[in-house]
Length: 333
Image (cartoon, rainbow, N blue to C red):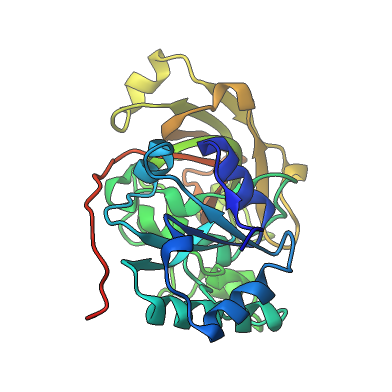
């Protein structure tokens, strides 16, 4: 097992997650008695550079990694796919670990299949635009329990709707945007209420480096927003980082924004209705929350519509830390 990588730092560990599709980590792999089938599977998987990586975390020296991923038992084996934890094995349990590794081997051997860990996070869901090189979809780090959205029309979706990993129903095959938008039973989007402004508080489960925001808005085409009451797409957006709670509308006007963005008609993708908001990356480091303030829309109407939001960047340290607890051999499990 000489090809197992010894993690030297938290940054080294995150680099392994970024550079390999599947990462298997453990605290004391060399001390686990392997069956012949398990050893054979491991040796085969180790021959797949950049696809599968085996990493060993020294829990005494790499406390940042241990705390970030809430390792509470020794040994703990964690399997990551596309930087998401898809399986965890606690204790020295060769049988359970063997089953996980065999499943992992089958996944690696079936290219393009939706096997191991599919759907475990928002990164496996719908995305309106491509990801910038070197960054990932971190929408799954949104703490949906803490979301807060002001001036929301209750006849439509809520704040959680914006982070739904599914494809917007308005883009469903066989149905036009106009038909889907007017289907009262399937309003999986958000609209403002008394005017075109929206104020959204987005807390995160970990500190993030936020590179880009993708915002999807799919109002019906070819309509007069002023006369027909049809919602508009957002135009001016102000962003505030690391706020403890949602801002009031008057309060936001008096606070300098971290960044202000003005979206133009050509910024919206003609197929997915998605616009990419590129952020000043240096100002969006170690971000624990974002307040998104839609100041106005792109027309003369009184309502603004948003279907989906996606967040692109890098994951950081978990905000809630756990503690270690020693677990002996669990041969009786």
